[in-house]
Image 1 (cartoon, one colour):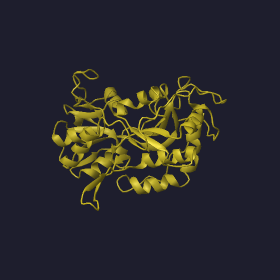
Image 2 (tube, rainbow, N blue to C red):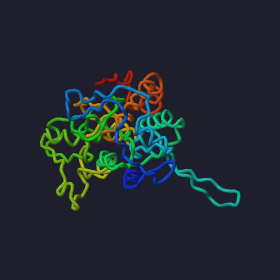
Image 3 (cartoon, helix red, strand yellow):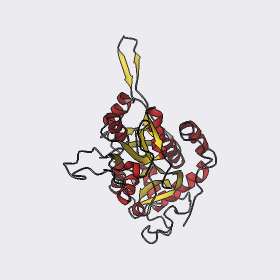
Image 4 (cartoon, rainbow, N blue to C red):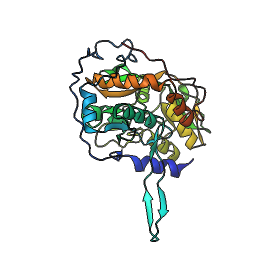
Length: 331
């Protein structure tokens, strides 16, 4: 089932600190003193997809990024078509030696991150990509390791109390991924007694907490030093590797990610239908309202053409039928 490719990608990519231009660029969290009204996500969560109105004004956060000369973005490098690294290239030099050039980060989320960098800094290459696991997205923002997270991050009420989200840039839904030969039919009682893998800190894990249908989805020692990372894993692609090894029976994840995994491995497929409606947003540190407004300004223009181009390039073949981005909502 494509074991060599997915397993190598999954296990080799976990733990890499970042990739892109530059190395240890310091990120000091801004105070959020942008002169605009600050809205606390905890005030109300009737509509978590509603974000701050767009603005091109340079507040404290944007000014700091411009002074640094780099936008630091947390991304994935193991989610096919969203954020993934191309294979390295090897070329023979005139002296007969060989030179290896590292692969590049590509994908739907990478294109969006570059568009934000171009708007703020005038050059899409003035960006530092830091690869972070699913369960470290919020921590990376809170600690100031990154300015933004562009990493298939679902907007919800719980997260909106911890980070500030842009307007939604993609609609997805949770779905089950399993071998084509499996008797599992979807997110239903066919999961009873089955071992199900999810990423730590994901909305898929939260869905199974609400309704597991008798499946086994928790590791003994979850969140401790004794956590075996078998059923709950740091990066979602690790679940595909577990599935290919026969260590789990199914995966629950966003259908947008699962479609890419099914494209990598023709022996697996999406089962049933999506059982949630979720929206991806760009996340920033709470209080960095000027940066959120600036991202929303970028998204206004991105929805008018670049979004469709990125969808056609990266997602249409494996996730067809999407007519356009979600309409923005503002507070």
